[in-house]
Image 1 (cartoon, rainbow, N blue to C red):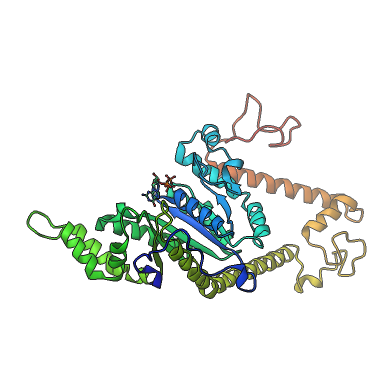
Image 2 (cartoon, protein in one colour):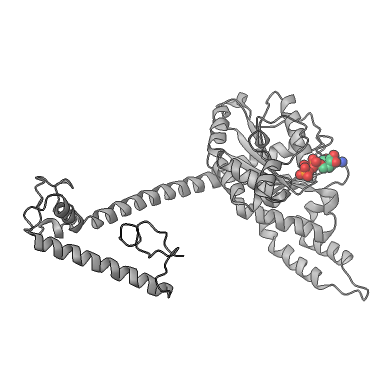
Length: 416
Ligand SMILES: Nc1nc2c(ncn2[C@@H]2O[C@H](COP(=O)(O)OP(=O)(O)OP(=O)(O)O)[C@@H](O)[C@H]2O)c(=O)[nH]1
């Protein structure tokens, strides 16, 4: 676990980002902080705090709001999903409930996200932090395809960090704490990005207990024992389960940072920005090379797919060394001549073209034979189709299935 998991430093809102300013040397890319949290955890208040804090440091952030249902935003976003999609209108038009409306609004917005990213990248020179607020219904972002697309798109372009906001006063029960940690764990493994757990509302409840439980299995075990004995003093099944999970999560705890903040008072902001800086370094060191590797793998796969498609196409066109000799009957014969399909020996389809267009050297009898064969093949295919459907050929509106000109299936709709 990172050093930032210690008890909250007695810092104030005045403390600023300790590192990462333009003044320190060459201009770094801005860090994107994606704020995720359960409804009511204080995400919006935290975003507002980050915004006012960065303004006070003369490093105003660039803000993206991805929550289409937020009614009041105490800060103004540079890009706001609500300017593009009205989720209530989406609900009406698609006959959806609120969650469906929010998810569909996010999906619609995602279709334009390349443009959004373009704007963000343009501003990347001028800002140090890009803040992203996500829908209050956490699963809409964390478990949707659009959430993953947006996260991946941002992370493959700029250093990105996930800040998971936790309502500390509501996490003091060992069972709630465990649920919250499991959720955080699932998001970490889903996004595969540097992760910071932000224990919010420390003005009401300090987060030391949470840090203890994360660092010390026995401390958690003791809290569990205190809370979960039945009237006979026996540990319940749920307690055994949670205690095993705590052991499993040890590895997860080692891979993340946890800080305590109060979005209300601004306490803990210095610790948070230190954690962000650490996370940025982790992104550059561990995540970026992996993302680059995946990107080049994707590019190589696309290239290979293209090549395979081209080879298939060539094969379909009968363009191979074997057929290069061609039969003596085939015109073109490798020399081009009057072959409109290029300088290759012609295949069957091309032969047919010649048969139809300029077959003066094929006698009428041969043409009749070809036509008869084609008709027979067509009828056989049609019979097979009807056989598969296990129906007799129906008549539609008293008319036979043959079209008005007598040709089969030409003008009448096919039976379903
Ligand atoms: N005491 C205290 N209250 C806080 C703090 N942060 C947020 N709150 C309160 O918690 C409540 C929820 O805060 P929001 O910021 O609306 O939470 P949210 O996660 O954005 O909620 P959704 O919009 O439902 O996603 C509000 O009443 C806030 O005033 C904090 O640090 N300390």
